[in-house]
Length: 74
Image (spheres, rainbow, N blue to C red):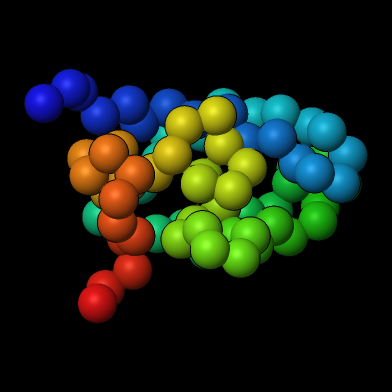
């Protein structure tokens, strides 16, 4: 099993601003406010969180299961 990467760079689709963030390991992050344009980002359809939609790395639960599951409770 490979190590989980917790750093992800979120890119705002509205203004292109990028910021490196540390992803939570115990919850999905459904909302993220861009610090430049203040647009509130939400996951795209089919994604479980903003990191899976706009981040350079998918969230920890997706990394742990090789992209096969969602971090939403079933």
